[in-house]
Length: 498
Image 1 (tube, helix red, strand yellow):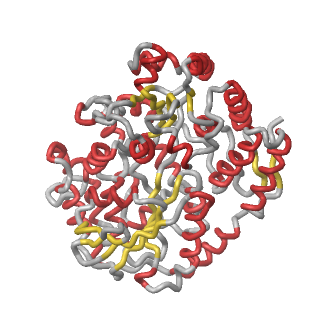
Image 2: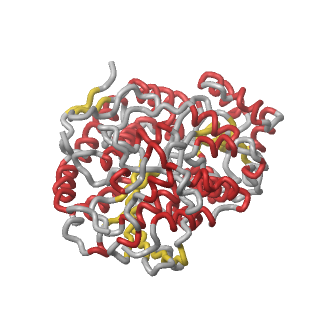
Image 3: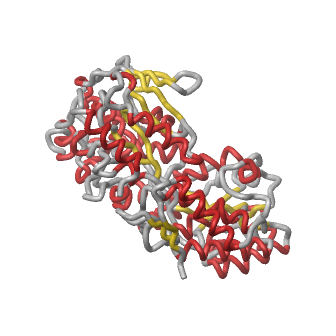
């Protein structure tokens, strides 16, 4: 079964025709410039890692593959339209893509040195708005004027499979773009390459991120309750759910909440599901037993006072305020991007007040995947951007230093884990990569489906009313069934664990 939108996208992509060629430097020159733009400390081995410099081209197999790609000089458009849900990707492009000249004050247009412009089309991810706007644009792709075409778009782990679907064919296989995943992306974490591939194993996307999660905690609260803020000691207090439950009781006795709310733990349980929410070709939503474990444990913790009942989700005002200095919340479960993009801007206290340690359960949260759009009139530029932001080790290390992102080269992150240059001022001089790196090596992704975002959002919404005492358990289940069928009319059944 294909969703209606996927069928429509397939029609649009079939009409889009072959890729045209656009107007900057040849690809190998662009990659060489990207190498020159990285930190001085990292340039010594840039020729080996970037597989892109002119001097290394004759000796490096990766550079040979890069040279075979469509050159940016063959591109026909002057506008590169990029669809995303925030400015995170734009800031990474500005940091490492050497062709960037300047960005408008409102962040909507980035001018390149060759005269081309990147136009950033931003829509919120919540409630499927971003996907709706992207899908509308993709449906117009075949007939759009060159400078109106979607050139590059992003997807999240929750719905990446919708856009990497081989039949939909809206994301160009990387090899067709001139990127050889086996060579150019050989150092990426394997699971990120698998997630970005279609059902035939053809990679149709790439990411600069690997998103292992940790427990991020307030040092002052730890000292008040246990007399220490040492990460190794705190790890013993949160080593598993039972141990953390006992620690939550100690935190409660001192007037603190262990975590902000029930939504904070959802990803840990959700990463442990054994089958996808909707299996390929089916119209049934399968609610995994781990999701019901989250429901039962969340209700228990909320009733016990270990969670703040006033915080009814994530990425809302109450949740953001719970990260401030006046909050009584001890810890959050966040990946690296969560520390940089969420916690840091919400914290209004002194620098160094937070630290990281191992979580009660290993998990991965998120990941932004880049896709070259079928029908793009700027394949050279798009290819160069993907390589610069997701394939060049020195660039990725720069992103890690500048933004504390846990980035997508295994060798780079192993180096960062023992490199004092990657200590975080926000975390009081702690090097978070020391904790992130071993978690990343052991990530096992739960099976994905194109319905994941809706299922993840709507089941939390439905049971939030149950947690708050507004509806009983059975009514919450009924409300989820109604909501998921409204979001996806093709869904015919919801199957609950016995």
